[in-house]
Length: 238
Image (tube, rainbow, N blue to C red; front, side, top):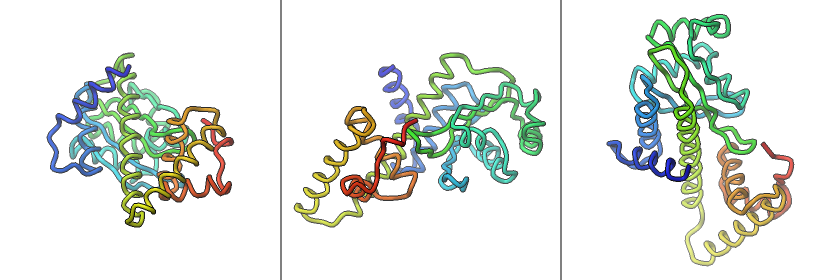
């Protein structure tokens, strides 16, 4: 599994991009996913808990329009996957999808899409968004393609959390003493969360980062609340 993750990361890195920014990276994820999953296109939408769409990316302009239709009509596999926290796998949009999403399914089919697969981007109880996979032919994902799609979703989550942590680092005051205090508090918070969730130190950090991203807060602020016992994660399990 680790080898496959590394291989996919390498494929993403090999994609041409205009910059090393977060949005450009998400676009490269979409382009790589479309090729790897034999899809006509893919899209990524970041959502808040109240359903407001923020950052988005797509493999190509047509897929971007298909992705956006879900938020124009307020329905579609992306929205359902986000709300249910489970993949929504539609191998044939003509088979019952019109009753489920009457406006979106019809518009997507008019745009040449015949199958849609939506994978929630989440970690623990924190929901970040959805990765959508579009195909011009009817048919389910193979087991390997399904596994790869989950890997692309995990890589996207990691990229979003890395970006959030980098932003938080820039928000801290300059100076060695401040940096030492920041790291010490962060490490203390990790240990407390590790005990609360009965997990590893890596899982504790991932849970804190996901919470910080979902709540649009700095990681340092989250760590401070954990240390001050204003925030606990033992009730925040998947």
